[in-house]
Amino acid sequence: MRPDWPDLRLTAMHAVLRAKFDQHATLADVLVGTGDARIEYNVSSAFRSGRAKGRNWVGRLLELVRSELIAQRAGFRP
Image (cartoon, rainbow, N blue to C red; front, side, top):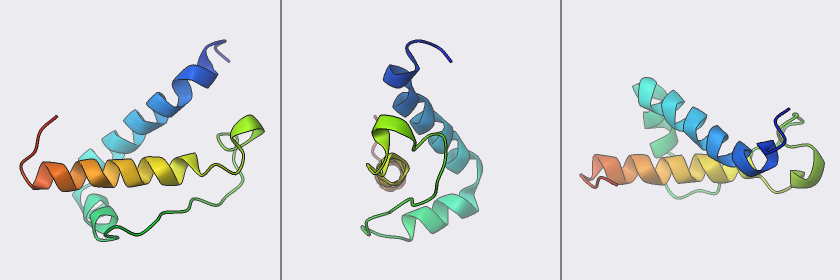
């Protein structure tokens, strides 16, 4: 593992999730369809282990991607 992975992993996961939903319109529609609901990702995985355990980073990142997709569909560009 890269020594700087703890500092990069959230950025990397965001990029992966964004690419996933950019490439799969049906999945993006499902995500946007969740509205403003809180998303809780609750599964054991290497990403969730260690010091980040219990912080729901994947759920938070899904909420971020959802807000980006909603803004994009409304015509806003970063």
